[in-house]
Length: 309
Image (cartoon, rainbow, N blue to C red; front, side, top):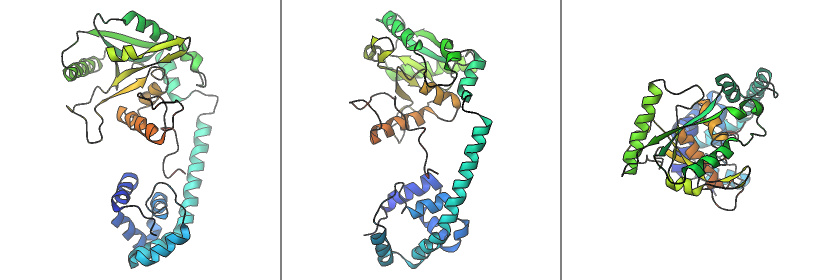
């Protein structure tokens, strides 16, 4: 009973998290174990899986029966250095957390909030069809969304009334892809011409389609549902990439002026990162609604990343 996953999965995890091949990692552990980093030890110790599995005794028996002499030597060396690597990594992480706490006390707003306070506004360029049916109803709904307080966000009182949606009308085009190409170029022209005011994001814009407008609704104050499209202005492919991402993503209407803005404004995430997060949330079912969401709302982005600590 060997607990290693298929080689394809092993290679994928090694490349994704370490930038190494399985063969290079095994050779490194066999010949120079002290040079291993903690993440390298961690991945090998967990049998090249990202989740920890039980069955330690049976695993050891299978290792002895199946592995080559070099692979066995690599694992023996791993046992010698893993604990010290783990302890060192834990200490470094604790020191980093303490430094961050001292630099930014809990009562202080996060950097993205402080930036909004400095800019005096925060929001997006929002495109819509000229003479769109139902626009006034949607505008009233959006006004309600903008009025929602960001409880739990330190400093939210100072940024509550500075939310901005800059509306841009355009003439509809017959082809959706042609329309997106036009809007991307129009937005880039605005951005490169210096026409985006401070606080208006330049790495994404919003698009209200008829489909999105009809999907939105309200059951009263601070009770909204529906979505709006977030568009990557720098997406250049004419089709989806190898992962299935095509430069756009539905965003829950209640998150546009909250977590989505936070993530996109920090520069730490791209729209594709949010797209990956959306699919990860649905895959892991880390959402609290009855049905699988069709728009990004819940997130795993703030969960600890492998190797976790």
